[in-house]
Length: 208
Image 1 (tube, rainbow, N blue to C red):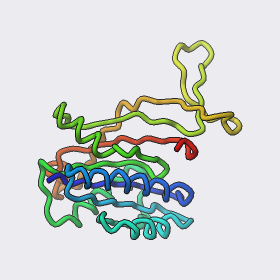
Image 2 (image 1 turned 45 degrees about the vertical axis):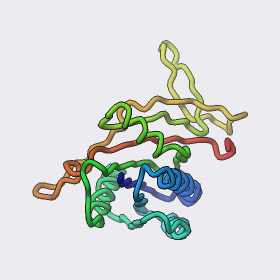
Image 3 (image 1 turned 180 degrees about the vertical axis):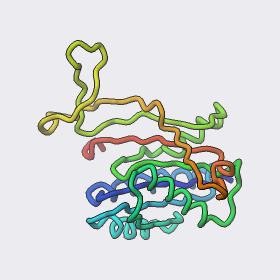
């Protein structure tokens, strides 16, 4: 039976983390109900937070007993990559048994909202393609595409004011399959977990 770990680094995300976690929980419940997945662990690292991100996370995850959870405070990491790296190590250390062929690591951000089939759809695609890593599209909230004078390819930039409507600039994520590095002499989770998956979907809050 497949085991899923979801890791989320967060810094001062009290406005979005509730919705993020509810979307992750819904995707996890769908995966558990489908029979594809035997267990889901959701882990969040509150990175140097000065707001209520960790409190909100504890409260929301406590409302979902079907999920295992790990919430840690990270006051020393200097980059989001380091936060994510340490969080994966924490989940690995807290896991009693890891089956290499059946464990999948999903990672996203605390201001991102996952679709309901985030886990089931990804695992189904893996079954068909035997993929080693999966990345998805990201719909950016509050961004518009513009052309740089003299350039042929549009790029995204923040608008100067609120978007007039449900404007969406879809960015293809090319390099989001993420493999952490591990300390010398440490157990290497990457050799025991099949792969890392990142499929982050950001949608406007009013898009339903």
